Length: 129
Image (cartoon, rainbow, N blue to C red; front, side, top):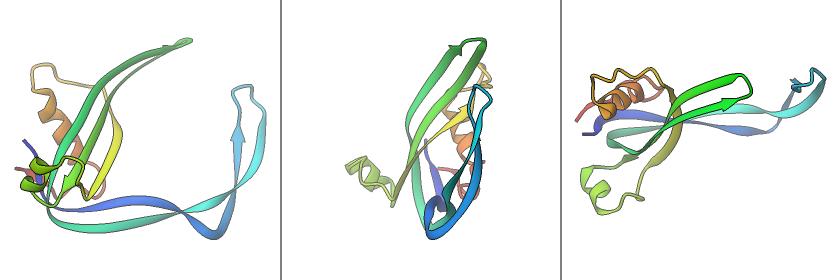
């Protein structure tokens, strides 16, 4: 299975000269103001891509009293299926993200991951291929 169609690769870069002040609060409650570059949204349009999952990991962790459950996913978009089959590292773009671990154990895992990917900004026009 894969996703096909038109999409946008959305990524952020630091502005070359513009900055903003942010207040950072440490776990101990102390805070300080820091100057950071303004983040700039960039988009690259791609037509007729072939997007496939590269990796899926189920992560469960505890940290003091916190308990977290996530599905870590990596996916990549290719010019077409043949390109992906010939060389999995010859992608147009590659991304990694976490999806909430709210799985329906009666449905296939990869189907749920592909459905989640279709909700990500820039990838909503993709369809099952």
